[in-house]
Length: 404
Image (cartoon, rainbow, N blue to C red; front, side, top):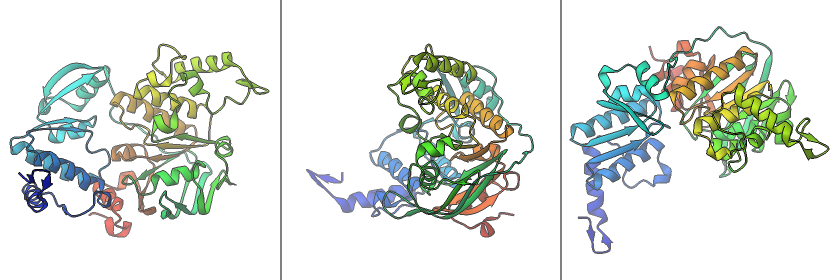
């Protein structure tokens, strides 16, 4: 209707978009550039785009991955309104609480097979998890009180530039002791990537210090930082964690291939690398038919297990786990959480950066919230709520964010 031949009637299109936005309760500015609006607003635009076309079936694939708790609540309201309007909605998610909050029926898919369809109000989370994984899954973590050791990581007044030259990390300070998990919560794009890259030597630090076991490792080479006792589980396993065309065995030796017994005077000992891989595959339950298979042949969960096996096996004092369970099923999530808690019990310092608030709340001993490259507040998981964390994530300072 808004197109006359090759010419778009922008006035009419704008009017229709505004009418749709009003009807569904979307607060959007139709004149704003997409690059300048938040991820949650971009998502609303995506929905409006579909509604504008008059679609009756809407498919959402993991739509809440980067939203705050408040934004997720808003999004769930939107889905319910769309269903009331008579739209058919398919929601693909691995978050059980979302299924409970919004779906009428749920179909569980495991390894490409439909393993059952249920009325949501007649099936428990435990049963759904069991169907998704094929065995019983422990939904609640039991975590003993922390046994704190010496300070392992100290970051002082850190300033780091982002890709566009502006500061992404602004005068940030934090510390972690052995036997402690510090959860770093925040909305994607608030300096998480730049902070992790600065600690691991992948990005230049403008000013400030990064001390590991008292040693100043600011702007040192990646290998020096790694050898000083830093394990890194990156947010993007395929881009930064693995070399996909290389064998699983070679990937498991990526951090150590130049050391004995894997290398002797520059000559690689393939037998030693293979034996190491067989040991780790068994120890970390990596599901593969052969260590010689390329890493690209593994499922996402097993790719993640491979990275975790390689990084945790080096007995590092500091473990940086960035989105360690992104896109994984409840079985793989349970496994990875257990591994991180085992490292905590072994006296390691763990920096957990995650956009999953459940993960942050369950695993952390302390939670620091990152907003616009700064810590907007620090809270204890047992003394905070999703709502308070959500406010801190949007930049409301700790003293103003407390909810009675």
